[in-house]
Image 1 (spheres, rainbow, N blue to C red):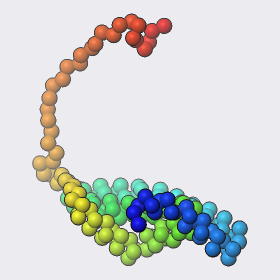
Image 2 (image 1 turned 90 degrees about the horizontal axis):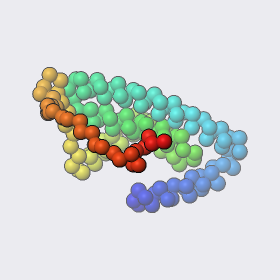
Image 3 (image 1 turned 180 degrees about the vertical axis):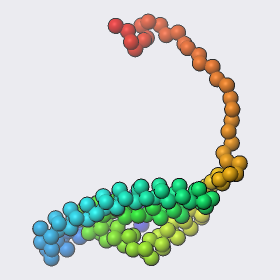
Image 4 (image 1 turned 30 degrees about the vertical axis):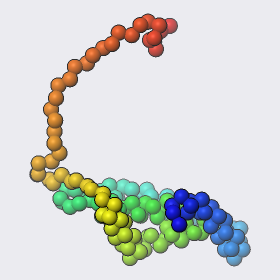
Length: 154
C-alpha cells in the first residue's frame, strides 16, 4: 500500500478502532486515552525538538555526520505527533516508536532508504576549509515609479 492510499484509509482504521475498542473502555476511558496520549505527544514533541537540535550541534561540532541524530530525533518527534492524533492505531504506532530497539530499527531502515535513494549530505569539518565564500560587490539601483503606480499615493 502506498502512502497516499494509507492516508485515505487512516481515518477508517481509527474509526474501526473506536468501534472495536471503545466499548471495552467506555466513553470516559476512551476520552481519557485520547486526552492523555495527546498531552504525552505534545510533551514529547516539545522536548525532542529542542533535544534534537542540541544533539545535532554536538555531532556537527565533533565532526560526525549529524544524519543519524537527525533521523533518530525526527522519528521521536514523529512518535509524538502520532500520539497527538486521536485514535488507537496511531497511538500504538507512536508508542512503538518510543521503544529504543524499535526506534533503532526504524532509524536503520530510514538511513538505508536514504542511502538507496542517493541522498547526499555535505558537512563542513570544524577547522576545515568549510563552505565556499564568494565575495562580491553590488549596487542598489532605484527605479523611477510613475506617481499613478505608487503604493503610497494619496
